[in-house]
Picture 1 (cartoon, helix red, strand yellow):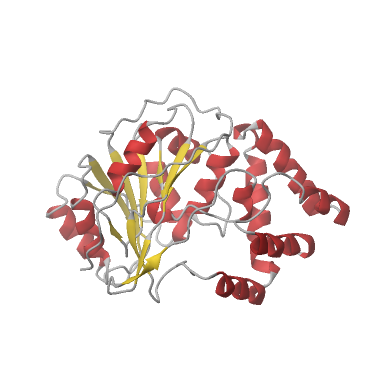
Picture 2 (picture 1 turned 180 degrees about the vertical axis):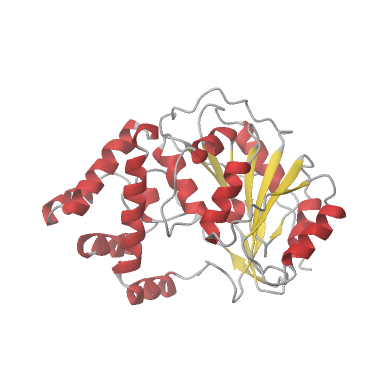
Length: 334
């Protein structure tokens, strides 16, 4: 297995949005229990290495909540063997008989089953966690206001299917907040950890069809005035292989060309779905987010002039100038 150098302290970034109306949460500490949420689907090729990386975590107080989303391989057998072996006493089977729900549906089912008052960490079946992943995330969340939803996310060390190094994921943009979260997701799910206030918030909202669990979590937390904590140090070995649901494109031009080939249809469909879903959760949103959301929603249903005005909203942009121009074009014509 690839040997990576020891990682130093996390570099944290505060999002200065106002607190959300989610109250009376216990303050996380450096020893807080963590619930790892793992959704599996035909993951037998890589799953055992990911499970081993859970056992190797320096933060020892964790349990694994898992749900299988319709596997046809040996995934369930691997999970049951882990529960009876190295994971004995730590594994909770959340299979509910509902079959295939898709990525977001399966993870949201796990969020609703998470123990109250615990930090929640999303996990993908094909990655390998670095030993201090949970420890750094727990420490970062321990420094936040427990009454305010908080989402921690980090960069990744990119590897191929055999764990050979490919590079490091791009630096995450700052600041990270709303309405910027409408234009793109920066919180890669395999690194995301949520404090109890954020978990409680997510259980109160319904995601739209077609979204992904990490983007929806980032959207809801930022729209509710929560805090986004960005760790510049990588926390996982993020496999890039043919079976990736998303994956990472390192260079700008491949990303830009892929976006141009797709056109505005797919992006604007999920953009509209996110706006509509957040409108349904109006009372949970921060007042500033309510105003921005209302302006964007009105622009989507009215003429060109309203869309031009909406594009002047602070923060309604993507990570860099060129990507922002593509977003603005899609917003105007899509």
